[in-house]
Amino acid sequence: MALSTAKDIRELSADECIKRLRDLKQESMNLRLQRSAGTLENPARFKQVRREIAQILTINKEKA
Image (cartoon, rainbow, N blue to C red; front, side, top):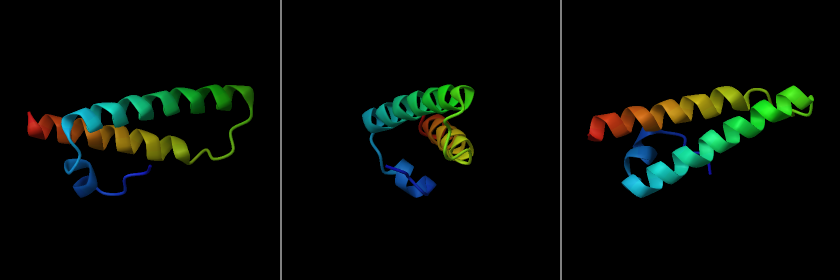
């Protein structure tokens, strides 16, 4: 599930945001492992994952 806009992230509940953040951090770790093993297919996904993590964290701080 790729959220494309901040509006979509703002519509998520707090629990959904936490779950999505946990999933993205897990995906980030998996991408790092794939890169080190040399099996990474889409290197651009790193940037997408990092950006989405930053968006979620920023919106959570706005809500607080």
